[in-house]
Picture: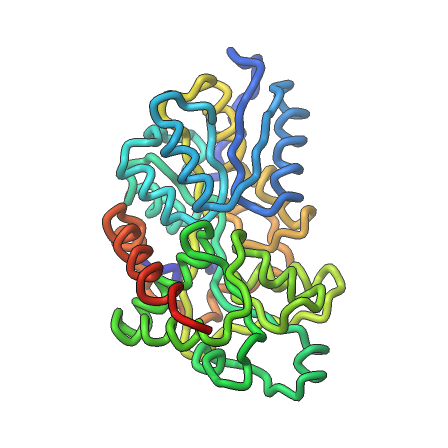
Amino acid sequence: MTLRGFFAGSALALASFGTAAADNLTLYCAAEEAWCQQIKTDFEAKTGITVDMTRKSSGETYAQVRAEASNPKGDVWWGGTGDPHLQAAEEDLTEAYESPNRGELQDWAIKQAAAADNKTIGVYSGALGFGYNKDLLAQNSLPEPKCWADLTKPEYKGHIQMANPNSSGTAYTMLATMVQLMGEDKGFEYLKALHKNINQYTKSGSAPIKAAGLGETTIGIVFMHDAVAQSAAGFPIVTICPCEGTGFEIGSMSLIKGARNPEAARQFYDWALTAEMQSKAKDAKSFQLPSNKNAAVSGLTPDLSTIKLIDYDFEKYGSSDERKRLLKKWDEEVSTLPQ
């Protein structure tokens, strides 16, 4: 599945928000903390439903949903990369649902739902890349990295951070991107070479670029919108779209199977697909591309139609067996190597 051609510029009526059967909702949010808090506050104000929100990375959220399968504590899993959402759907951890607001969504959001028999759906998208601290780059007399290949050069040793793909959807997207971009053998050779230059594998996908913004590392491998967010906050970060091409995410949303508050969960799901809700992402300094065609988009949001995107195979790399296999291989062949 590809996003190419889907980003060039009916709305359904906003779903009714009457009195919910339940007064509470437990939300697992895998986006940035500020955005998660905004979503919680806005939904509470819209509906009067009290939201208990927990923010974790995509991989951590998947692990929690899986661990709680026999006694689910969450109602909705919102955000984070789509691969673990697809894995959860395959493992029957989430519920099928077709919102009346589907007609407002981009084709790629609906294709994500189709790949999971409607057990998940796309809520935003963003391309993988990296960013660097231009002050640190100058202080260390380092050349500007422009390509994935540049990051394996010896002069960048100790200057790069990325997340651990076991906990981070961003880093798993990086792993799956290299395999698809280069082929599995060459992709893993690349990851081994990159490993020599990594100073830390973080738990959260956006942590590397935040560290770069604070001057704690020079380069962070992240989704490009996270690098843009650091620049928008005033940090000396330059965002790079790798010259070879890159992968992308379809940030997704799923209803947790066996949820305690299913009616409130569906209310949230419908609301989360509206242009009204998605237009507010920019207010939280989140610069992903929204899935609702009518949502307002920040001028700082990377234009995915201009980026060389690979034909990322979400069904394959979001499958349970493939994710487990690649993560095991990374654990055994990459993470254990000396640096």
